[in-house]
Picture 1 (tube, rainbow, N blue to C red):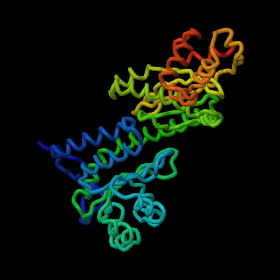
Picture 2 (picture 1 turned 180 degrees about the horizontal axis):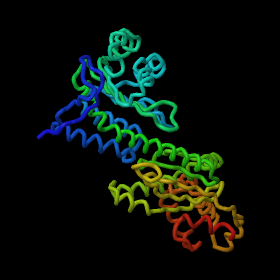
Picture 3 (picture 1 turned 135 degrees about the vertical axis):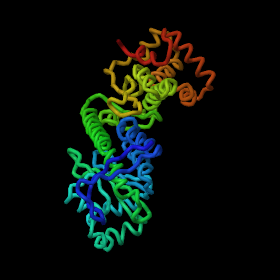
Picture 4 (picture 1 turned 45 degrees about the horizontal axis):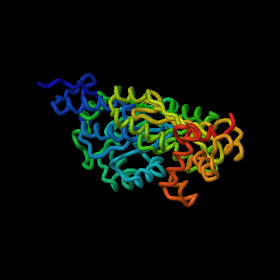
Length: 391
């Protein structure tokens, strides 16, 4: 069973009555391809980033139209204006830096205000002039782009319109005629909705980044591989002032990767993401410079898209007066060697680092550490620093 697909009535090489409708049968393949197109167009925030969504949109709509290649122009903050999984970056740069200015197709789209277009709609009886133009002769033909169609919409706050291009390496294909125009007309509202949501999200993300940068508290945003996505100036300044940044970074690493482990255990489904989002970890670390509190929690898609992110907070704790060696030895009965090791533990050194610094074996360092814990009345090394400082 087939269903009629109503298309736009526009001038064709042959005369057609203005009220004549174009009917195209939808095959089961067309139904499946349309379903996939709507699904991807309406869910830009289910993708890790704008490039992932643009790539999937290009692939799915190209399958619907039987196009050979696609490219996506999107002018929003923080993403490349041109993106394609079918063309090398050099080709995109060449278009942006020179051929965009002489693209007579772009000029005609702007003159006519067309949202759904193909070559005939843009150039009509002047197709021969288009074939002789610089954009066709020196760019399109050399890149085997022999037929084109696409969608162009204006996005509030953007200097350039959003356009998705579909290309064929064969001229005059039926798919790029009125049938293709009709199919693109069906998905146009979903395309507008997806681009609108992505643009709104991008501006929201820029606003969030600006807010984070204004905070006096250090904030670092990491992805689920532990890589830094954003870091505010306060965080950068704290790391720059630290005389032992490696010890501080080790504590941050431990918090981030503990949360990464929790996220991996929970899975990636919506309910699992919600469950993971409630976790928060904190750790105190002392260095020779200062004492810090490192905190870690998840940020969900309502702030940063589909993929969970990890927000790390870094707070420098109020300075405390360190007790003198004589006071500590008298109060806790520490030997000279135990006092040296206790201070190194308070600075965040690992057992291995203590052993190397003191010229002793790992076994001896562990034995001293256990004895220090016992004398100070603490259970772990994070409690050593506060115990050595006056309350």
